Length: 164
Image 1: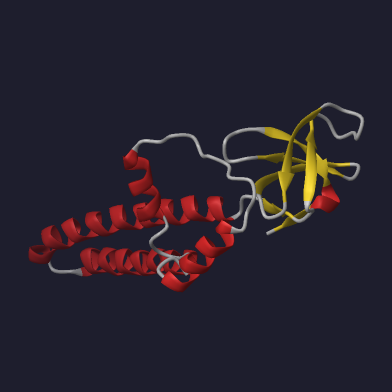
Image 2: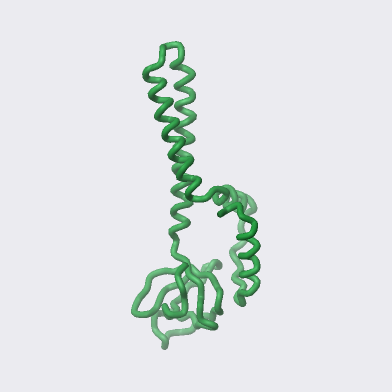
């Protein structure tokens, strides 16, 4: 629900309770704008838009194919515009779908040590606290690789994180 202010308010309140404040890398302002445009529509709304553009392009093609000669030039222009809109909506849908399928997790242990390898005797890199959001990677013998928003990586026991 990308335009629901209550959801954003609740997320802000939940973020206040998180102990670890992970700073994201500094980005240009234009990338924040691109992200806001990308996230403006839900995945379902993008799928509907993609389908509608496809049907409109198909209808325009059929109209162009079977229309009288005098109508063909304007219908060809409409067809090209609809095909471009169809391609853009498909790319937008694919972009959002790829982001929505990324594996994410929340640290559920009060405190967990992040190690350099999937072994309790390996070097401790840093610690994380309950509520920290991480990217969930490969799992190996009771351990899972994680990555933070700032790029730091490591391994934690799989029982200390919950996939979302």
